[in-house]
Amino acid sequence: MLKRLLDLVIAGGTLLAFLPVGLPIAILLRLTGEGEIFYAQERIGKYGNKFGLLKFATMLKNSPNIGTGTVTVKNDPRVLPAGKFLRKTKLNEIPQILNVLKGDMSIVGPRPLTQQTFDFYSPEVQEKIKELQPGLTGIGSIVFRDEESIIAASDLEPLECYEQVISPYKGQLEMWYHQHRSFGVDLKLIFLTAWAILFSGSHLHTKLLSDLPPRPFD
Image 1 (cartoon, rainbow, N blue to C red):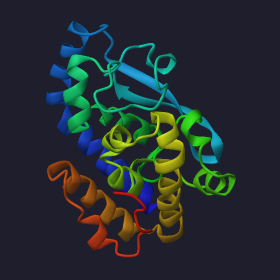
Image 2 (cartoon, helix red, strand yellow):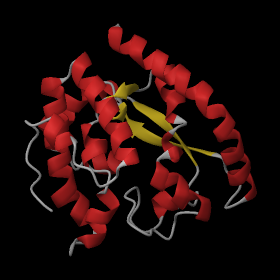
Image 3 (cartoon, rainbow, N blue to C red):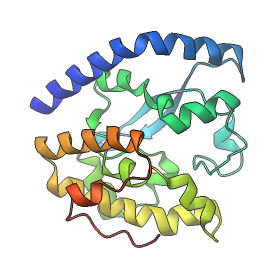
Image 4 (cartoon, rainbow, N blue to C red):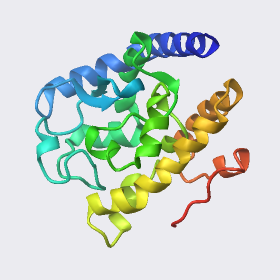
């Protein structure tokens, strides 16, 4: 109940504070790209239930059927001009506040994945993640803020890199959260999310969360 109360307070306050910024973004998206403002992508939620994850439309409407599917790479040609800024600043994620208010998501939890990327997890990890409410942010989102750069630097194909490099470690991180979840940990992750947005190259999470699984790659 305390976690849900925190969700409602943060989501409600963020929504009100964001309205003056959100309106110009909506107008910009309507006038550029393909004219779409929002995009709802099917994600895996608690108990394995699927829901529509809301985002500002930053990519071509047919993106899931083009190129690397639901995995986005650095300098992805499917990203619209205005979308590059929104994705870099994470402003494209703000509409998910509505998912939080609706109850599809929490502020903090395992990042909800598409069926394609969720299937890369082992069955054990999948079952543990299904026990939790997915989050707007979480340890996986913080550690993998540079996910697109990791894929770009890899010698593997994007989907192979995600499956063989990113997914196993992200699964370990979500298992860590499952084991350590608490109100205090959630507050730390909210702070670390804001810190990562302001200081993208920072690794403060390794100091505040010293028992995280070690990152197996550079």
